[in-house]
Length: 280
Image (cartoon, rainbow, N blue to C red; front, top):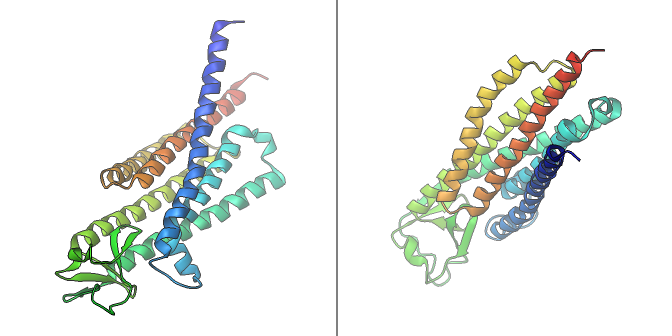
């Protein structure tokens, strides 16, 4: 057997192995975000959650779940399925599921926005003493979506006053609240950038299925993607510096995963052009 063919086969298997390992790791992140947000729920909303409260608390879980499904759909359309099979009910089913995922992603984006607005709905309490007898059960905001019970050991953080978050029994010192707001802004910007990325990919996929994905269109969307991916990379780095490891890890995996999707689209377009130019 030709050694070059053997080498190509090994590289292909390695490529597929790494790609699907990344996809599997992203699926695992759904569980980690769910555990993190269940922990924060103990300090925020109580009782039955309204749809708005649900998405505010579980924005990352909803967002990541929808994105994983959307990623697998893109994988099917750009790599696994032949163009000839993406017709009729198959095509409508893929587009229908993708629309539902898109709505879930936008809903999660609204959840990030709601959380950001909640952080700005803060009241300054100059003489706060949540550790006094009979003061009730208060929580201290230590990081975005992370809280600890206020006790005699950490009351020093709000000894000179505290910001109360909304109507919750949650307080924060000024420096922590400022840092958390920056992280919440990063969530919003990151989610918005990903929405724009998926819109561009949706345009490319639909044009490809119709045989209208030209080099000019690909070149035009490429520059927009440079800006968006640079924004997403900056957000990932910021999370890393701020010690938000799960967000940093998740963002890095998503950037890696969409490299594969972009390669799929590139190969898909090239194969289509080769078939079109091939002599009959």
